[in-house]
Length: 222
Image (tube, rainbow, N blue to C red; front, side, top):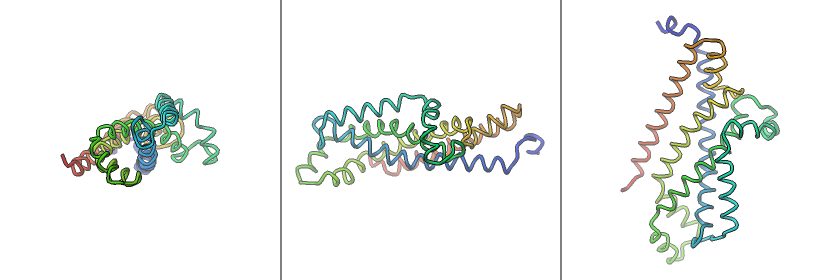
């Protein structure tokens, strides 16, 4: 029945495309979470009246975040081709898409981290400082735990955006479902391939959203 409905869909090619999309999304999401969290915390701590208050560092970090956050992903992908070539000796395949995915998403998530940290009750931070807590203790025992629901919610939104980014990267040679939908579906007038690839992308997005919602509800103590 499925063979009749989708005659051009090959199981092995579809499986490989799903693997490549999940691989690119998961690796870039993990790296984005770590890098974005670090940048967001730096922005927060260097802002006025905070532990590391420093106008110059705050301005420069914020400027870099805004610049990279504003560059359309496709343009960023092209701009980073020399860097990608240097890292992987290739500009094709899932690994070649990772630098652009991470650099494109980390600033976006860093802003979400900053917003989440600003929502923390300043009294909690001041109480920790008055008890002589080290900066590292405040970061790992106060800032991250207090903002964890928002951090998880933010990385869920970012991961979903990364699924879309992988589709764009796939169009120019990174593989995955984007490559399958465009190169093997649309370009060859095989609409069944494009349809199946699109549905699977939607399924991946729904799964990410469900996982994010469950984790957020589990850590939210309000």
